[in-house]
Image (cartoon, one colour):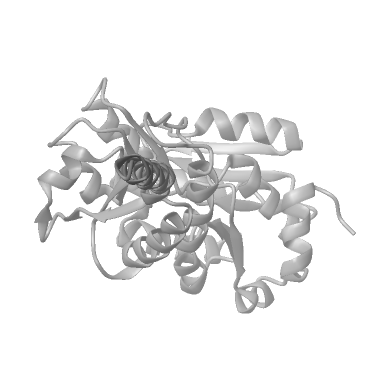
Length: 311
């Protein structure tokens, strides 16, 4: 007679334990295992990694440090990851030599990403590139120079994003004055041809056109022709460009986290190659004064870039 209550209590305790485990297991790790590889521990890649780790963990994902090319990569972490995030070109190249896990590259330009992707056809691979949309760059020119009608631009041999600029220029009713630079020896000829016919020059992050020598020639020659440069980084503005639109490592994290919110546990659906949604601008007002250009406030510039409407 005593055994029955004891058995009942044992079953009740077993039931409570099972219910507790059923409730705790999903809470333990409902997100993705995300491996992160950085090209460098310091600088922009380090800033990205630190901000991303905090933000992704807050969504319930488990962020795993998989190393860097200099330190070596953690092969075991990469092999079991649901998603591999790589920051920079060196990290991407290193990871693609290993396991074919879904890989998302950040903190690199379109030209370098597309070049690497062509060598790894069929791999589950995409990117959040740093290149700004062509319309955004052209609107910045219009924002700082409302009277500008002709935008100059130089492309490298592969003419990356040329069609996007042509479409954006047509939509914004800007004439595009463009030339192709096949090698550094031909830079000055094509640059001067563009500067003679444009109101302002759009600098794009083509590998050939971003060497220290090329940037120096572009800056000095554009100043001699009294043509402002719309660039793609704060450093370019500090060196002498009039203005730039760009995306910071923190903003890359913002865009990446917005996409991660669409992903649950299990299979990852990589996004298409995407341009930045988040951005900021920089203006060199000393250069503006030297060129005799009166530039609106940053707030007004940002509003025009976003809406195309002047106050």
